[in-house]
Image (cartoon, rainbow, N blue to C red):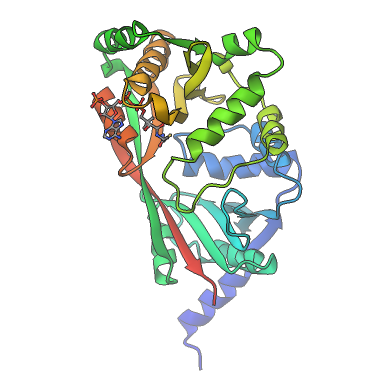
Length: 328
Ligand SMILES: CC(C)(COP(=O)(O)OP(=O)(O)OC[C@H]1O[C@@H](n2cnc3c(N)ncnc32)[C@H](O)[C@@H]1OP(=O)(O)O)[C@@H](O)C(=O)NCCC(=O)NCCS
């Protein structure tokens, strides 16, 4: 016989309503959950919807909302990890209301969808300041494959002067720093290909849970064109006119005082010459002078980039963890 407390739990599990995300009204519900889960990177319904629509059409993906008694509790995404060599690895995100303790219904749905696509392995990214998901994954036998530190810099405490001097010493050796907006105006026909090439070359060396497989140019352009970007906040370092390094700042479209970082990287033959330092110094100083208050970023815990970020004054906040399980 099932004890009555257990019965209540089983019945309430059945009360979850799981819906496919479809259309702007659903995306408004998604961002209402997502923006509470990750207040360090809020998005608009329109941008999230456009981004989802730019997903490579040949790649399996499913997005769902979990609600109960008319209240949206979780938003989940399950997609084939097309940026890795593993065809049957599915990457999942599950964002929930911060106060929700039990996210089992969302994990069940993500695993069910992944298995329906033919997954043999599933991974989730989860945050240590939202412990429900990490705890539940551990109980289900998921094992940690990567840990990134998520950190924030309060620009009111950032003193640009010494950093700009360091930048100028690097520029004096022959490097240039230009915005992507300037670069695109000077190279209207091939700037996208230059940016794609740079991102792919950098990603080769970014620590990731699985080896990186290049994303095709057409798929990458579709994603780039899905939404407006402020290319005056992305910077190329040039050597003899050619891009050899990149740093990306993404001004937030919901909260204009908040910026997120994208990729920073320098081509192998130009490393340890202060180029990344010059790019970050330039970008953070400019952001501060334009009224930005906070920049959020994350780095794999052993990435040298993290040392540079610490020197710039970032404060660790929480970890972002990747956990994986081979499905039995
Ligand atoms: C991380 C990376 C961007 C550094 O670029 P770089 O131009 O070589 O860095 P810099 O010369 O400006 O170094 C700045 C500081 O970073 C740290 N650093 C950079 N590379 C390092 C390394 N290999 N080992 C230890 N510290 C290192 C040091 O603190 C250095 O300061 P110092 O030279 O005064 O000691 C580069 O190695 C890279 O492109 N890596 C692959 C992409 C990546 O992982 N990007 C970060 C995630 S987005």
